[in-house]
Image (cartoon, rainbow, N blue to C red; front, side, top):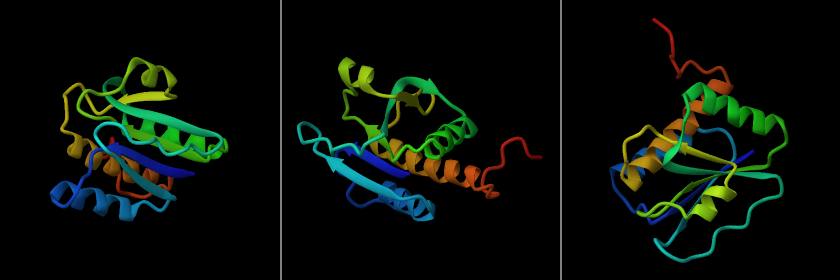
Amino acid sequence: MLLHIIARGRIGRGPEAELVERYMKRVTWAQKVSELPDTGGRMPAAADNSRTILLDEGGEQMSSVEFAKLLEGWRDGGVREARFCLGAADGFTPEEREGADKVVAFGRATWPHLMARAMLAEQLWRATSIVANHPYHREGRQ
């Protein structure tokens, strides 16, 4: 399954870009990053049998294990692409929210766009490592 990050705004160079690159290098699943301008621009075409996840502060809060199980279920169910959308400063329209398969939040706090992208990259690495039974994730271990 292709993990496709679709983000408004350019990340450029800097510590956030380095974090995204560091985590995405570890992900063994197919991946792609598409950057759109802050306004306008054309959303990349979705593959057949894809799922769209919007990252939004008002979305569902999921544990890392729940997130991993969601991706694993989609992958095992034949989903070809999981599209993770990071919106511009004003977020998503009601129509975009209604058209999404899932709306997810990284907690109740508002995060800067570039930090949200780095957090998404880390959670994708964490989720794929959980699915692969890699020891990176240590939830509940003492």
